[in-house]
Every structure is written in structure tokens, then in C-alpha cells.
Image (cartoon, rainbow, N blue to C red):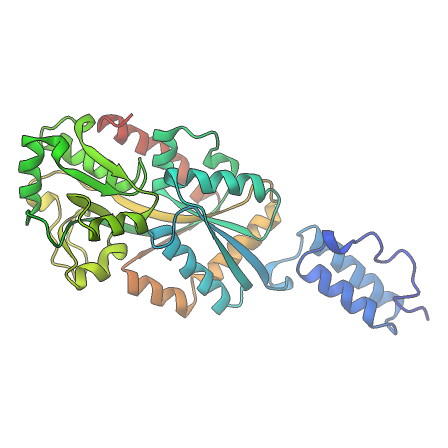
Length: 356
């Protein structure tokens, strides 16, 4: 009875460079077990071909080595969410390893451009994104678009908080608004990129209190980490960002929280909403994950199953609790349609606020 090594034409067409996950394992198994029957060889060959084509379910694949694009500098919301997801992928056994690539700037457009160019057809590549990226695309009009990559799932929602540096001469949002009305340019707002949730909120606040949104002095940083450093250094009048990003500095009194952008006060928080303070502004933020361009439907399904498995892990539950993130799972075409609708809605809001 011929062995796998003696059977011509079984594996030569499946080059190692074209195989991923279980296909490589199957080929190595067949090549090292030289006493396999011809029937076994046939089954192994068939499985290898199916794996190479992405036609096996997640349970049949070996855990993937995931490459995670984080289109922001370290320390911000996408960075922390992406690393929390990576940890959950590892803990759940959905991934064998996770590597991270931080590329901040332009509300994620720089990282998006690199992801589009480097991850075409790659079934092991993921990218963090969210509402901020849509806002950045609307305001910045970059040469790349979110429509060029593949939607996987929405993960979380979160509201923003506005804070004052510890050495601020102001104490409340009312103080800031009074100064804004006197001299809009003297109030330096600090936050993420142009089009970020805090940028939109600042423009909406100005409009609500009778100040031309075009006159606000908004300083855009390349992600939450840089914005936090500017706030801590007293280099801005007022800063904004995700509550989870600011929580540790609020707890240690290095920042003074003066308003949240939610409709009601956040759980376990005494920070008043903007609406409580007579400013009719409410805006949230969400974060999600995308895959590279040009992957197959089966590869998209496998990645979705992988992320779904990760968000059921203990590690992910701990991250949600630690960061006060609200779980907001949505996947497949439902998520794709949600992003399309969000883009249109966000653009309308930004037009109304005088941003575009």
C-alpha cells in the first residue's frame, strides 16, 4: 500500500505559502505519517484543499495568528479596546497570538490607509474603528474609505466626559460657557482628531449656547493618549474623551469632570449631564472591528465567529466592567447597514453643527 510520501500528486499543488491554519497542519501530518492508507491520504488532501479555500468552519481551523491594526496612538480608546479584544482572543483560544500596530492620526485615516494597502485578502488581519473614524472621513475627505474594508462586528458603546485640568481657573461647565460667550477663541478645547465625538460635541455645545461653531478653538490630537497628556499638562482649557480613558485621572483628581454627553448620569458616577446643565446635547460613541479588503464570505464568517467567541470570555467581561464599556454586539449585514446609517446620520449632525 503506498504511503503519503510515495503517492504522487497528492500535495505538491498545495504550496506552504498558500496554506493557512489547519491546511499546513494537515499537510505536515500527512507527510510525516508515511504508513497512511490511500483513503486517508485522500481525506487529508481534501481537507487541506478546503482549508486553503477557507471552506472549513472555525472549529476545524487552527487558532490564528492575528495582526491587529490600531489606528491611533497608544493610550486612547481604540488602543485600549483593541488590546482588550486581543487579550480576549488569546484567553478564549480563538487566536494563537496577537500582534499590534499603532498608526495614529487623521481620525484613523492613516491607519485605515495602511490597512487597506497591506491586508488585502488576509484572513488573519483585524482593525479597530468606530464612530470617530466616520467623523474623520466626513471632515477630512481622505483618499481611502471605510467601504474598502470588511465589517465584522460592533463591540461597545460609550459616552464622553468633559474635564478641566487640575490647575484650571474654572470649576464648572457654566464657567466655561460664560467664557466661551465672551471670547470663543480663548477657550481651547482638546480632544481626538477632527470629527471625533468630543469635537462634534464641542461644536454642538457652542451652537446650543449661541456661539458660532466655526469660532470654537478646537485642538485636534492624534488620539486619546496625546489629548490626555495635553490636559494633564494644562495645555488646553477643557478636554474631552471617552469616560474610560479619563477615569483613572478623575479618580486621582488630576482632572475635574464637569459634564458627560449621555442622556442620564452614568452608572456609579456623580458627574452631571450636559442636559442637566441646560445644554441640550447628547451624543455617544461606539467601537467596532473590521477585516481586510477582499476576504471571502467564509473567511469573514470565521473571523466573526472568532470575535464572537472572544467577547464571551471572562477577560472581555472584566474589560467591560473595568472601563465602563456597554456591550453592543452587532455583526454581519446588520452591522454593515448600521455603519451606513450612522455615516448619513453623523454627517447630518455635523452639517447642523456647522462643521461641514
